[in-house]
Image: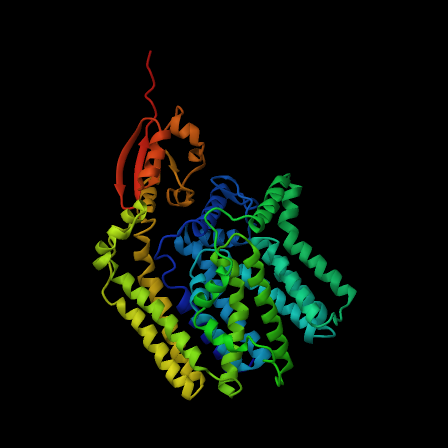
Length: 553
């Protein structure tokens, strides 16, 4: 590595740190996923049980432990807080940008590596996920690396490196399994299967490499599952497998969606890369491509993109991050498209400029309207039929005052980019769009997300924090993990027996939290005995049930 390459890599690390580290602890964790995983890490530290993932000090069989281990390590070093819960993904962001540059440089040269890195960093959802506390950034990275090293094995790297690439591919897919489950291998296997069909099964391999792949995959991906069985926790494995099947076959509660849900999510969420990638979604795009390494990578990215998109279109449970693996191939395709535009092989069409400006305007106006929401929300009250939403809207945010500029900057940068890039497709002109997008998402997350939380979960979170150290039970009437994490629940307060807490002879106070909706409040009043209303705040009402005094004889 020469001095120039070293300086570029160092610059990417510093760039990633500036983007992803600030503000990690500035906003409370959000229900369900962020708090779910953070609570499992907290309980892992509290109990000292590093093998078993727990929620409310009971086995939580929906996820393997690798990401929870990462969070627990960060919490061990930095304390149990939001920053520590999100730090693993900030690190994933820095690592991802560095890897994209190096992989891109290898397959398409230094300029291509930089284009891919910038387009990934400036796209909205990819940026956002690296400042979150969910599993998917590491999970997707492991799968992508597994497919990448296998592509090197299958397409290019013969001789001595074949075994190494097979082992690395298996290792990363195994890490994916250890992070979120066997869907990591499913995505890899489907991608490989489609690639085999497209190359008419012309695939050269060595049986010893098959053995290496199998052994490494089994050791890395299966180690935790084998340990569970060996220690008598085989029922956890059974429940885990049944849960994975249920996600595919049924619509998980609260996570439904229409058929083209993930198409829409990727189109808007991976702006601007999603628009810039569109010209390469046509037959014959690789005609005349002289760089066979780049062409091979293109094929693997296109295949993996459609495999994941179609797979999770079929899956009935619709969650935004299910299609988040597509961020890797989609931004690669965008980099390929922009590179072609710079070289004059692909045209930047008027409709692309129109789409970029339209979506930038949509996001820009939305954020600007949000910052002005308190000024006009009173006019919306008569239109809102849901009582919980109406009460939540009555919260008050505290804006600094400059926030409307955030959306304006995005729109202006997008318009300037479209006008200049159409006349002269250069990397420097692309930097205008990238800068506007990064400024928008970075500033929005620092300044707006915390204010938005005040309209949603803030009253409940504040209530739970106020109960830290109190010997009590807490029972939300809606599914939530927030009361575990933010009340710092201890094992002696883990009871979640609804019937006993609502009508039984409890031995300590039990607090009930319900959404401020007449129907839901009445449902609570119908089941809770001797309840006392404490107060209501915005979207929530808080009650307590005290234990009956002991009769003295």
